[in-house]
Length: 146
Image: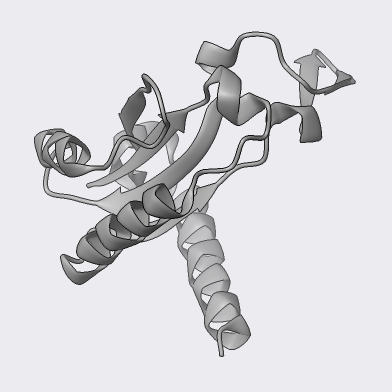
């Protein structure tokens, strides 16, 4: 199963405070462990929400909202995509993670939908389209990598 592991933002991360060398080294070591274990699919830190935008949908209308966004506890400062056997395995990995912030912090784990989760609503045509797009994206990513 794939999970998204989200590092929740803090007042400090939203202020643009960068991690120190010690924390960067600890996170680098943790990421290497994830990679060697075959768990890490992707992972990145995110700029503060002041550099972001939201698009609100209301029927056919679209409204662009500039950051920063008020509710820090609802924001994400970084993420990983992991391949694990279960949510419990992901929890065990997170327990081993260095604290991603200097003070209190929180990490959220959410399973990704897999193609079979959509049931009968996913017609054979939609399944074929999904498989084609995934294959094309994978091929394009391979062409871009050195």
